[in-house]
Length: 402
Image 1: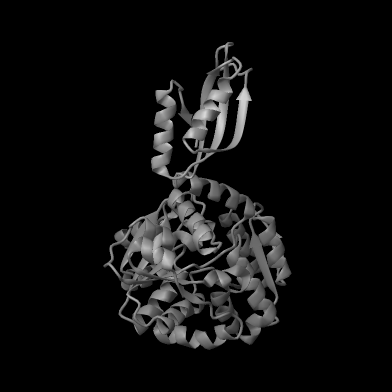
Image 2: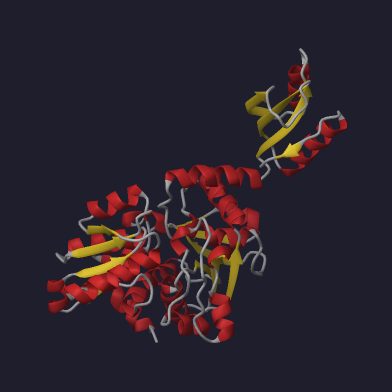
């Protein structure tokens, strides 16, 4: 079982490579949640995510023979970059096996930090299997992303910093993928404070609560979530008992809720978080756990490495979920002035038009009609409902597309 002393021992090693990231009170989220909300800005960490902490501690504790042989890891992103940088700083050769679908930006970043990148397989499982083959063939040391006590201890240094900077903290809300981050943080928080620890998983990759109920690690067949940093099929064998003993509650959040959290962070705090980094905030905004008014809550924003193509989709979805963006389809009589009449109604309703697609040739409408799709900027759920009601009262058959 990981102990507080292991995390404290990791702190000196981690401090040589990693930043002590800021802890800031958020007036915006404090007001929204009726609590004292503090953001631990781990998205400002080197490599853009917390993974460098655990990787640094693991590399620092290698034996001389292990250093000489080199290390291997499997990762689609943050762990890859963390191991690459930590190994290069210690003069240790690192080979990172990444799935063939891994974002090109993350491949280039991992190579830029000094690792040899091998692309293998369509998914993480295939990449991991190949990494273990290399481990056996080349006598590499395998650096696991979460199921390793030294990795967990390194991640736990975030918990030490939270406890030191916010000694009166009452609740710490932590993402769960494989469980390495929350195992380390919960160990530090339990040893240094009286605070409780809440774990958060994405619904499309949730196994922690089921594994806790079953008393053993359960795996999913597939994962499906925008929070790719915590999109693991299972939690770890070593992390399960720590989560059971030191984590007070585990909750899940949906992808739409994660998208809203990312969008709100970007708009209100000017902070760009990846999906895995925003799940704690999503849980808070969704009311997924109970707390007292005025309670002091710490949210580690654990990473900011979001693919720009994914970000475009996420922001759009976040605006849709917040009632800020609406796409509708309707039909008009194919006559002069019909589109002007529709536009006038939208203008009176204070809906801003982003785009209009006008199709007179669609086989889905009568030859005397035209199909119109509109992308609209709206001002919230109540505005959306009022707008739709107005259009329908004026005789338009409206289909909501997004």
